[in-house]
Image (cartoon, rainbow, N blue to C red):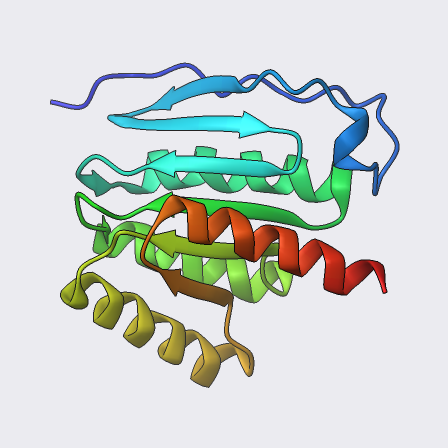
Length: 161
């Protein structure tokens, strides 16, 4: 049985595109999509993965990413992989179709705490995306959330040059 969950809160459409994250309130917005918990703070999403991600959940998470991309231009998706990272075959197909139709995400995805099997699966999915789309998503694996946040700081500094 699959519980119905409300759509994630929508970001204000009044904000200009490519807005600086520092202009936003520092209080994170908490969302629950299925069993997953997401904390949204400016241009960052911390996704605590709890079990499989199905197509309906992925649809909502991608919609959130589209909103962040429209608002900031680029955003950061931090994925807590300590409990594993798994999406259903239908969700994988949806993601591939979305990537093909939209030219890919505007996110830098940083996965922390993932075990070797999860890293291998994500790497294989990314390689398949590269073969089909001609490019692969920006995904970085690190050990800890602190390393993930340091990666964001480095990416921001590099892009400001």
